[in-house]
Image (cartoon, rainbow, N blue to C red; front, side):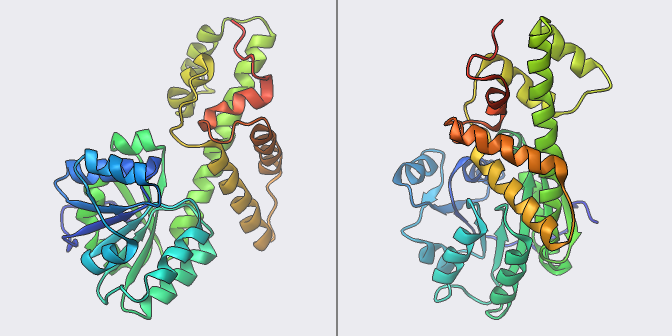
Length: 300
């Protein structure tokens, strides 16, 4: 396992495909680090938003692959990643690096790395532990699977994005570790939501309850980022609830393939599916509190 250091052989030109919540934060970090960014997204308003913060809008994904040494992917699923890379086979160039920050199936990452290697392109599954806001603040953690050489080439890239980037091993290990971290993170979030609902049921002051939870041995960092959102009902998305449900399904799939058992995650999946049925899927994942307590939470 390696932390970033100042010594690298980083690419000089950067492309970004996918300008959603995470993609926009990636662009902001790159631009703040003095790295020009060419970006593409299927949504015109997202491309316009990139231009407003100083990025350059490419005309297509082909244009990005033909112009950039390093292409970052920030896409909603590994299926979308596969589609983008399928379409890029005529424009990719030997020596390029693909840095896939999407959360997807670890097995799919291995397949994409093998396909890219056939074209002389290096592939990193550089998953992000943290929300778009934490990435914007430079405190998200990158969990990077791939060859040591490719990781070394991207040290300056990662240092511009975060203070913590870890080389987790071969391709696929970054995606696997992201599922592990998201499992614990998601259960922490659900536990906080249920705890606050329990405090309300017992007639306790919710602000004081959140304060005391943070002061007690029950503390988790999720209380700092999601506690107030749960209490105020501000579910402006930093990370969408529906995206976490996608991750939970990947966790259960991966556990099944490894002959494992994740009983708490099975319960969490049912709760998230209920939240989506309630129409909360496009809201911040802290909206899980509403799936437990109903849309009236909090009552105080």
